[in-house]
Image 1: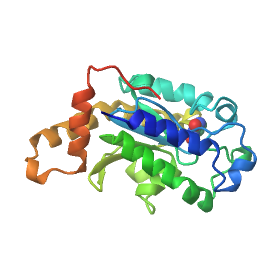
Image 2 (image 1 turned 60 degrees about the vertical axis):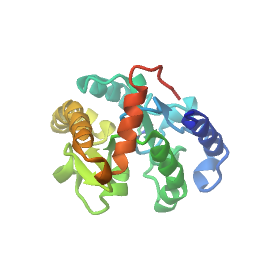
Image 3 (image 1 turned 120 degrees about the horizontal axis):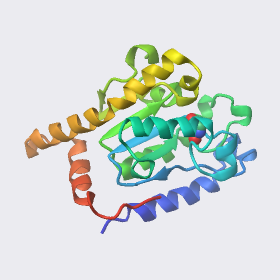
Image 4 (image 1 turned 180 degrees about the horizontal axis):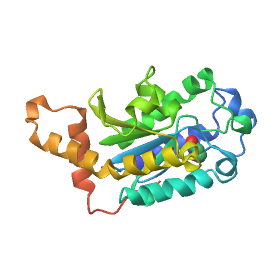
Length: 219
Ligand code: URA
């Protein structure tokens, strides 16, 4: 019996009362993340902004509206994917998250990744990219699928940054349109792999197959 929904709920309860960093002092609502916990694809943004802090939901402001547009470019529905952030509480005045805040929050994200076990992770902006590519420049690696520890990671510009800059906007639209190809590529790779060489993503693929067509567990 799959208990990932209960585990995700418990995680959100822990996040709501977390005091591991100073961001809890100014939080109204924590923003654990939301979506389909059996999604093939996980989006990781930076941190809650004003609207997210009020509602407890990720990407609901202007950047969120643009993210919804980008998802449709990728032929993805928001309710079919999972969206979260590297920090779950709003940095005051939308400042960058501090290294100690990223560290304090990272075990929550680790656990979310373990529970969802997505085929593809999309990082939105430089802070989530930094988890996988600490030294990279986003301008060199955006929109490409990179294998990191057996999982495909696709770094993207942050939607808020891309929204008002025409060249970044074109880039991010183009990059999102490639996502179905990357998901397909991972599925093909898993199907082609002999069982004895199975990588961590294999289990994920079996799980996705088993849940395809079954009612989605939305969080
Ligand atoms: N809203 C979020 O939830 N995350 C971001 O990174 C930006 C806006």
